[in-house]
Length: 442
Image 1 (cartoon, rainbow, N blue to C red):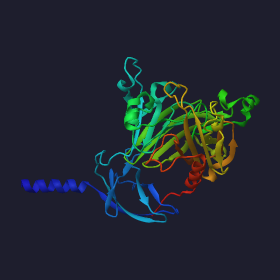
Image 2 (image 1 turned 45 degrees about the vertical axis):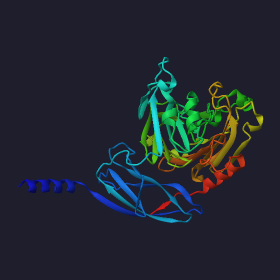
Image 3 (image 1 turned 90 degrees about the horizontal axis):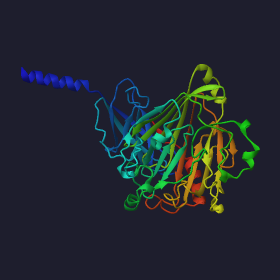
Image 4 (image 1 turned 180 degrees about the vertical axis):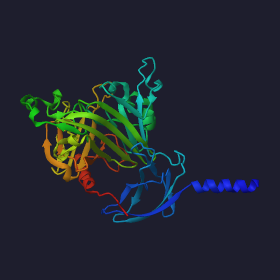
């Protein structure tokens, strides 16, 4: 009788576990072999799958499933593959309702956000910052209370952070060698020179100021242009009067949605943004895959029927800072290297102080930036004193998607880069990157 009950319990338990196998074909449409090419597919709906195992050629590869809308159900499965030019791969995906260990695969990405420890009796490495995946505010007062001023995320090649304030600017951290390092350096690696020397840590590489930085979404108002701005020197750091920050607002939130092992997903959510007579909600989603320089950006708007009506006719802007435009110490490198195809690709290459604190940052740093937008989203090119901008609009789904990428010419060493970066080489890389198409999934 006991044996029967035990077998019945096992059978009942096994019956509660559901599984499904999906076979897919991946095709590379590019005349270029791809390393760590991102793959993202929808998880079958209504099955409450909690995990998945991906195999290519019978070999299991790292993957992750993410709940992107916070409803408790996994929405997307993500992984990366290496694939030959015009090549094909077959993948077997087994979905399961059983949960797996979070450390099932080694992390190739990392994301972090902290409430700052302001105790001045503790050194930088002794600080007891409080980690969090979510922070919110209804008044603009959390920027200075957050360690590195908002969420930061990285893979082995690059690191980004997004400011938790009305600017919502993207800042950049360049690396010397391929590795994860933010958890130890906490972005400000100049504060830990011993670790920099021992582990070859990178550092912050650009001075953002009030500019678009790289890939930041802002509003735009041509009527605000002034003669004073047009004639003032860039070194005075007078903000562009036409640029509209994400303010006023009713509610703001930074949220780390996913942190590995294959990709990070970070949302910057704003509700009640008053812009051009509309009340808008904006989700700025940043997706960084392992092994990639580029970060995917999805700008998703929502609101009342009235405020969403004809939103595709409303213009916003994004683009890149002309790196070095504020640099008065080296005129040769001050904002002279930039490029745009006037269709959706813009890039810059220059050198400047990454921070006003020259004791912590005693040397200027080179940076090279790029943004790639599908021409269908672009309304016009706006070549301003400090930045190259594209006017952009949403599609009928009230979204606009684009990509951003960068390199750190003064820092990157082999095997992170095979030969030194130059403006000519960077712009060539950007043009090739702009043409790369995502993998086709069937």
